[in-house]
Length: 456
Picture 1 (spheres, one colour):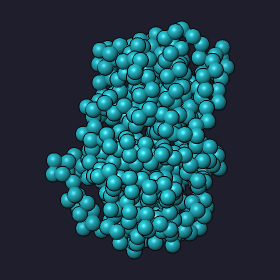
Picture 2 (picture 1 turned 180 degrees about the vertical axis):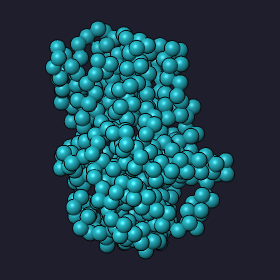
Picture 3 (picture 1 turned 90 degrees about the horizontal axis):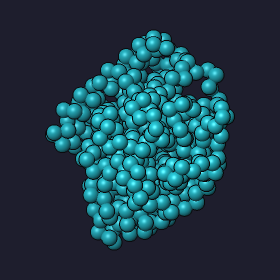
C-alpha cells in the first residue's frame, strides 16, 4: 500500500514557526520506519513543499497520516477535508502532540482515526488492519467515532525508547539541506530521551511521559549519530542534560569514536549550574549551543510556574556557558499582564547577563497543561492559529496596541545591536538574504499582532 505522511505548514496568521527555525519531521521519520519495510512510504514537508495535490495525484496514497501541534489543528483539519474531497476512500489518520493531549479536537467526518502517544506501533497496526479489512478496536492509543460515540483506548506504556526503529531519514533527503536554527544549517535532529522530572505548569511534556524521564542507551544514540551526514545536530529532547552520568558516558563514547559534530541541546539552568564539568566534557566533543529556559527575571514568577529553578541558577548557568565559550539560546517568557516597567526590567536583565541571543515567548495556556485548566475561562480566544507563543491568549493590562509595540521594543533593547550583528556573521553569506526577509516579516507581524484580534 501507499502511505503518505505530512508535516503541515503554519497557518497564514500564525507568527514565527518555519520563518524562524525549521527542524526535520523526526516523528514522521519514526512512523515511516515502522511501516516502510512492508509498504511504499512518502513524506511531504509542507513547510517546504506546498504541492500536496500534485503529490496525492501522482502517489495515490491509500493511507494519509498527518502530525499536529496545537498551532496546526485548524490547518490539519482543512488538509484532511481536501484529501477526502480528492479521494473519499483514503484512510485518514492524525497523530502528534495535540492529538495526544486533546484528541476530541480532531473529531471530524474527514478524520478516520486519531493516534495518541508514541504512534510507531499503533500506526503499523492500523495500516495492517486496514489492508486486511479488519476492525481497529483494541489497538492501543487510538480514538475514533463509532455510531455517534467517541471511543478511546489506553496507549501502551513505553518504558524503553530503544524498542523503536531508527527514523527513516532517507524519506526527507530532498529537504535535509534546508533544516536549520539560525546559523546551524543543515541541522539534523536526534532524540536521546523523553519526558522531564520537573512539573512546570505551562508545559505538558512531562505528562506525556507519565511524569517519568525515559532515556535511550548511550550506545544506541552513538549508533544513530554515526549515520548522520549533517555537521550540526539538535538533540530533540524535552531536557537533555538532567541525567548527568548518562550524558557523561555519551560524551566519552563520542570522543572515543572520533565523531565530529556540532551540537545544540536543551538544558535547565539548575542542571547546568550544578554540573559545569558535564558541560565542559560536552564542549570538548562539539557542544556549540544550549537552549536554556531562563523564563523570568523575578524569582516569584519562577515559583508561580513551578519551574524549580531560581535567578541564582540562571546567573550561574550563564556564567558557566560563557566561561566555556558555549553559545546560549536564552528563552524568556512574557506575561500578558506585563507593564512598561516589566518589559524594561526584562530587557535590563538580559543586558546584565550579557546575553548574545534571547527569545521572548508569550505565556501560553496550551491544552494539556495545568496552566490551561487554571485560566481557560479567562482566554480571549481559543482559535488554535493564535497558539504560536506570540499572540496573547489572555487579556493584557496594557492596551493591545501599546502592549505589542512594547513587546517589539523588548527584542530591540534586550540584546545590543552589535551582538545581533555578530550572530549574523556566523551565517553563510547565501543564507543571510532569506534570513533578513524572514526576520523582517516576523518582527513586522509581531509589532502589528494587535490588529489580528479585530478578526476574532
